[in-house]
Image: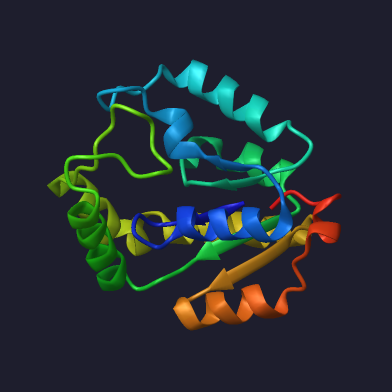
Amino acid sequence: MVIGTGGAGKSTLARRLGDITGLPVIHLDREHWQPGWVEPPRDEWATKVNELAARDRWVMDGNYGGTMGARIQRADTVVFLDFPRLLCIYRALKRRVVYRNRQRPDMTPGCDEKIDFKFLKWIWDYNRTRRPGILQMLTEAEEDGKTVVILRGRKEVERWVRTAGLSAADAAATSA
């Protein structure tokens, strides 16, 4: 399971992990958003996430705090991209330019890339509003025997991917 604020690189890392391990990749943004950026009702979304997480093997990226607990329960590994907010804002803005008037590969058809003040504010406030609760959940996950990996920059991600011993053979019994 790969989590972190917008612009941290969750989808990119999830794709890499899927390529390395052969595990199917689930992008929660693609699953959540309906064409035209329409959100599903909360109860439908919770049911869908529970069904996705109940699969035997996966790499899943996305925050969606209301469903994080259920996903952590099913994952054996949680990777938290704990990056500086200015970097994440820069990456979100860059992503907007790169995918202008089209959708990202990890997004629902009909959801062209966009950026607004609300999203930028969410990234800016993430360390103050979301991060403390996530760190608490990760502490509890470690106590429950989950592997928790906190990465604080691109170099740490590269080092972890190289040294984590990720392979298709390991993936047979792994959900990340």
